[in-house]
Length: 126
Image (tube, rainbow, N blue to C red; front, side, top):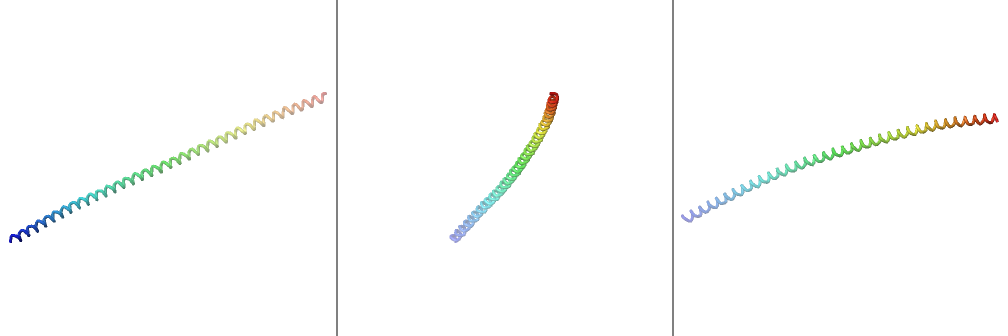
């Protein structure tokens, strides 16, 4: 009678307690799972954002290097052009000097020829 009823009642309570305990466990597992999913999602987003930033940084570095190379090439081209102009200028100067020298020498020759002719005349007269 009474003992059986008590035993049954205790069994029910134990079953209820177990059910409640399982429910709690299931709920905390669900919460953990959700938290884990959110964490994974957050990590994924962070990773993607970091990759985007790194990609932009790489692109920027590439652009910077290209720009530096272009500037260096332009500078070299200007330098070569300047050197070519300087060389041309020096050659023109040199040719001008040479020409002046030729004029000077031809004048000198004429003067010498005149002097020689005068000396011959003087010699002839004397």
